[in-house]
Amino acid sequence: MEQDKKKPAGRGKLFLVLAVCASPLIASYFTYYVIKPSSRTNYGTLLDPRNYPIPALASTALDGSKSSLQDYKGKWLMVQVNDADCQIACQKRLNDMRQLRLAQGKEMDRIERVWLITDDRPLETMLLREYDGMRHLRVSPQVLQAWLPVEQGTLASDHIYLIDPLGNLMMRYPKDADPNKIKKDLAKLLKASAIG
Image (cartoon, rainbow, N blue to C red):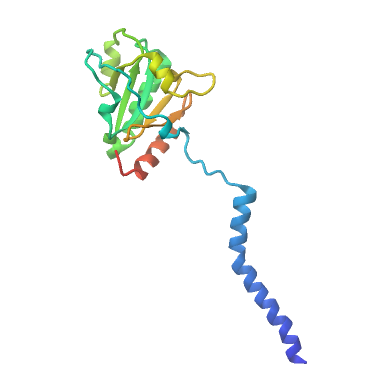
């Protein structure tokens, strides 16, 4: 009679142990399939690099000599597009790019800043001095329009783009982007990447 009472109590303990052991698995399935956490941790819009290799831009340096984005292959490139008449929004992007590079500390040498200039007008000397170290390339706006993806209702000149060290366009930041969020993206990319 006592053995009959022990069987249900033993089975109850067994089921309790099984429930405790299975609960993490059940919780993980519930979280993944029902709650569906967002796996996106980047601020910028990821672009498929296979769709955006650097095309033949037929670009030139400020002095008219041939120069290309390919010259900087092996580095991370922060790119902005604008004509030579760089107004407030353009200057803010140039400043953000300079500060973002400096904020990477010892990793900053892995990043180059590039301004793709879409006309033939001369740049202001003050801009050249203020953003010393910026790379300048003159490029046809039609070529850039065919290459650079934009958000609906924006222009290429509204964004900062990121090109990986293999020479592929891989990220676009929104118009009026938050530099602190870009900084976090860059830090993660530089930490995770063994190239560039």
